[in-house]
Length: 457
Image 1 (cartoon, rainbow, N blue to C red):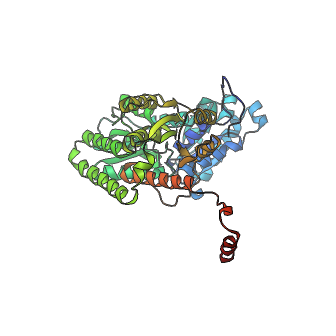
Image 2 (image 1 turned 90 degrees about the vertical axis):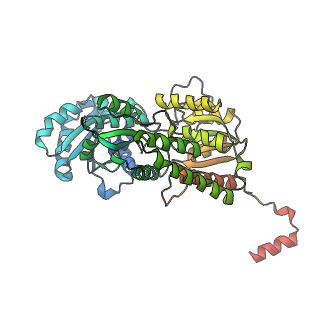
Image 3 (image 1 turned 90 degrees about the horizontal axis):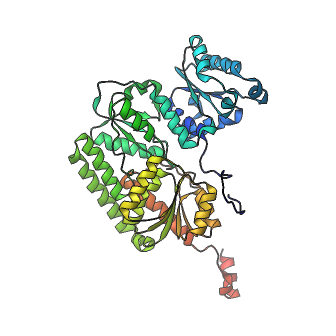
């Protein structure tokens, strides 16, 4: 948590909300199936790679990782030989077709020439060696994701012949939905219904060899507002693969889902196929809410709210909260500082006619200060924001995003119409829990009645 001391002219954060570039790179590489990850670092950084595999739900039997376990003497004297030896050992033990050789902060400090080392050792090993530099000094989690995706681009061929009605899905993992793979599944289902083939997912459960398929796709769809835009722009220029709907929020809520679906269908010339899905989805939401959430609008109308999460959900939530639930977004606190997301957020706010306080790259201190100084009734965020809201005296906090304190056994998409219902269900339960009485004043009961209650218990 943030401390209570005044922090003026803050140039660093003691409570960052996102990890370093290594975490981002690892999240990309963990989505490449069957590859090994060799990390040139002290042993602690290996935990970051393990967390990335957790993020993709890859169990221990399928993980092939190794670490050079750098010590102080290695950083001072150099550790090139140590890295070469580990590459040879990993090639023998893992027997994978691809080994990612990843440098961290320590490798940056040493000035290790990863590309040169891989070139030198490559003739001695069977696996393809792919060097990447991922020092935490190079940026935050989202910067690392973009770096990892850019590294994959070098292995995507520029093919002249494109497969009609086919797409690549980019950066589904750059999401604060605790079950983001359910959003990926929803998108796959929609595309299948529209007759669109998914050539490659960059990157989740994707064999390295499948990167070659990505070059033949006729379009790209980015499933995050926090990472992936750079790759989509570069592929449009270098590979001639257009990015569909770059100026639209992701499909969260009624209006955004309909607009996103229509944009995808229009690109492939199948608009007639998507309209029944839109009508059925809107009818389902209306039917469920009519029967089971009669107090939803009176509950939320004019409630002033702060949204604190990644841009992937903060941006599309605005229209749902303001136009569909009649809430008032007073503060938008984004974990990332993505230029594309900034432009899209400004466009959304202007279109909706709202003027919330906006913080890009918010850390714990910035979020705490915003919640203390901006009057709000509720906060949409994660378990972090729930605690920070309590510190600021805000009674209602929706624990929806990662990291969450909730156990989730079934994958739940936040995209689409069912996704809107899942979000509203979670919000409704958190609202009720926040307003439920925490104490019973037994003094209001006569002593005899209290004794009866105790005996009965």
